[in-house]
Image (cartoon, rainbow, N blue to C red):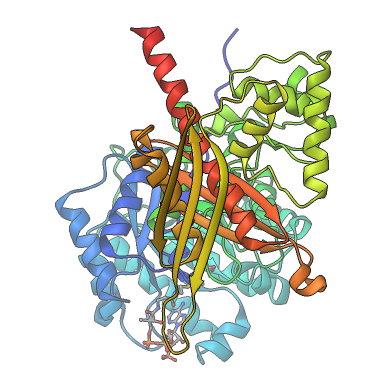
Length: 568
Ligand SMILES: CC(=O)SCCNC(=O)CCNC(=O)[C@H](O)C(C)(C)COP(=O)(O)OP(=O)(O)OC[C@H]1O[C@@H](n2cnc3c(N)ncnc32)[C@H](O)[C@@H]1OP(=O)(O)O
Ligand SMILES: CC(=O)C(=O)O
C-alpha cells in the first residue's frame, strides 16, 4: 500500500515584521537575529525579516544576514509598491529592498478601491500600474516575488472586479504567490471560505484562458529549481492567506482559507501583531499538521513548538500567555476533579492532542475544585504512592478544601500543599520548631526607609536558639533572623533566596479586618518553590509563608541527599 504523502503547505512567519507592529513590542537587531535563527531551526520555510528602508535597524538586520545567512529558511524583505506617479527604478524604498540581498521579496499593494482613491489619492489605473511596475522591476532584478494583497477581503466585498484586477496585475508581472490579506481583521470564517474559493476558481480560469493572458504560463525572468521552494511544482501563482485577529477569528480564518485552497499561511509566533495581532502560528501549525494532515514543519521540530514560543516571548520581553492554546502552561492543566479522574484513566477524555506532540506537558492542578484523583496524582508527583481507599487521602482533600475556603490558594503554592500532604500522612520531617517571634518596626517621621528588628526563638535537635536580625522591612528582618538561627545546623540555607513576595487582600470590604494571602517564592541554585500563608495579620501571613519556604527548601535538600546516597 503506498502511503499518501501529506499535502505541502508553506508557512510564512512575519513575527519580525508584522509581529513588531504590536504595541509594546520592540526588538534590537540582535533580538531579531536570535528569533530568525530560532525560526530557521524550527523549519519555517519563509521568514519575513522586516522592511529595509523603513528604519536603520531593518537595513542592518538584512546586511548581517548576508554575512551569516540562515541555514534553511528563505529570509524575505518586505516593502510597498512604488508611490503614485513615480518610476520604480527611482524609488529609494525599492533600492533598499534590492540592497537587502534576499532571493524573495514581499510587496504589498492596494486591493480596495477606497484605499486607492482616499488613501493613495490616485486613480484606479495608476494603482494597477504601481503593482505591475514594482513587481516587474523586482523580477527584472532577479527577485522572486510574493504579493500581499492588502485589504483584499474588504476590497473584494466593495468592488470584486477591481480587486481581481489587482491580483491579475501582480500575477502577470510575475508574482509567484498572491496572498489575500484580511488587513482590518473584520472578516468571518464563512466569508473567507467563499471568497478564497472564488479566487482559487478565478485563478484556475485565468490559467486556462484563451491565450490572451494565461496566468503562470508567462516566461518568467528567473527560475531556480535548486531553491527549496520552487515554483516548478506550480505552473500558476499560488494563493496565500494573511489574517488579523480583530474579530478573534484569525486562526479560524486562516484554516478556512486553507480548506478553500490557500497554500501559504502567514502568521506570527504567539500571534503578535498590529492591534489585536496576527494569526498565531503556535495554534495554526499544530492544527494544520495534526488535524488537517498538512505537512508544515518536521515532526521532530513540531515537538519543539512550545519551547520556540517561550523563547520568542522571552526575547521580546513579553510574559507568555499561560492560557494560550497548545503552548500555554495551562493548555493541558486539569483542575476539576471530574476531569482529573478521567484523564488519569485515559488522557483522551479531556485532551484534544497529546501535549508531548508539541512539546508541552500535562499538569494536575490542586485546589478546592479537586477530587481524590487530583490528590493522588499530586502525591505521585511528590514521590508518594497513595491509595484512593486510604482514609488519609480523603482527610487531606477535606483539609485542602477547608483551607481554600479560609483563603488559601494551593494551585500557585504546591510546596505548601506538599507539606500539608506530608503532615496528613505523618511524613513531614521536623527540621525546627519555632517557639516564639517578635518584630519591631521603627517608623520615624520624615525618614524614607523603615528599619525593622526581628527576634526568633527556635528549637533544633533539642537546642534552643535565640537570634535577632535587622532588615529594611519586617518580613526581611524576620527572614534574616530565622536564617541566622538555622544556618549553623543547616548550612544549605545560605543558598536559599526569597525571590518573590505577593500580597492579596481577600475581603477588602471588611477594612482593616480583611484577610491577607501572602505567596512567597523561594529558590536554591536549581529549583524554585512557592509557599502560602493566610491571616488577618499581614505579618503573620508572611511569617507562615516564609517559614514554610525555608522548611520546603530543607525538605528538597534532604531528598536530594537521599537520592545521591542511593545512587552511590
Ligand atoms: C498592512 C500593513 O501592515 S503594511 C506595513 C505597515 N508597516 C509600517 O507602516 C511600518 C513601517 N513604516 C514606516 O516606517 C513609515 O510609515 C514609512 C517609512 C513606510 C513611510 O513613512 P513616510 O514617508 O513618513 O510616510 P507616512 O508613514 O506618513 O505615510 C505612508 C505613505 O505611504 C503611502 N502608501 C501606503 N500604502 C502604499 C502602497 N501600497 N504603495 C505605495 N505607497 C503606499 C501612503 O499613501 C503615504 O504616502 P504619502 O506620505 O505620500 O501620503
Ligand atoms: C500586509 C499586511 O500586513 C496586511 O495587509 O495586514
